[in-house]
Length: 189
Image (cartoon, rainbow, N blue to C red):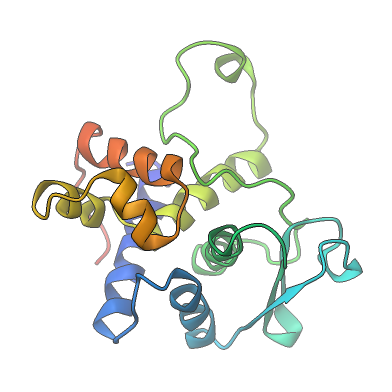
């Protein structure tokens, strides 16, 4: 199993644990903040150009137990930034690395078979950021949840997106992954 799949399984397990502890995943910002607080981290929005972000969109300040994220974009964008940082905490990254500058909540899990994405060789840091984007999406809307919502409860991707307050392309990508990628048994639960 590759690192991306392992990260997604860990994220889905965290989602399950949070729900078992009474968190409402349909309130994604509160859901992500509750997970940060469970770890002893406060979450604070800050101005986009804040010096505390060091040119990034979100950052961890470990010494202060703080996740800062830019206070811009949609509520889901802000939620995604928090979930991305939780991924760094959960997966044991170097916490003093450069803060994130770009996120892509709708990022495909599989490498592009054509075009420039196929030729570009990402460095370790860029690959890790891809992994964190997929972790964040899985934490906020696990594949097994979106699959059940669609197949068992009849929700369309548009209806799920509306209820979650997420962009359609994020939910559609997660639904595609849930329906089209092979299911891999969890290695950590």
